[in-house]
Length: 107
Image 1: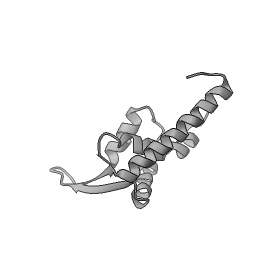
Image 2: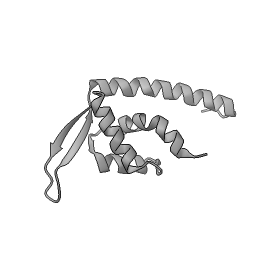
Image 3: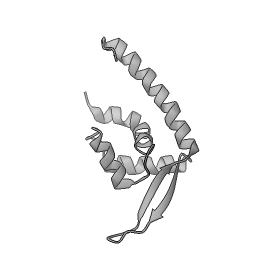
């Protein structure tokens, strides 16, 4: 199965989830997603998702100066982002449960 197609549908949820406990800048978020097992996630997809989530009002941003290289733009969940994470998590768990039942697996 091509996981890149699955990622398109859940990348928003994955990005919100990695920002739940700790703010992060673009490359850091990408690294955390890959460390979690989403090896096929693309750089452009993550940066596009961050921009879209920010424009939708679910993330806030702030800039942190860097001693080596350009300043880093950090992303953080706000109240709307936490609500979106909770709602999307419920939807995902329901969908995953349905798929587990369809393919004969139980959680």
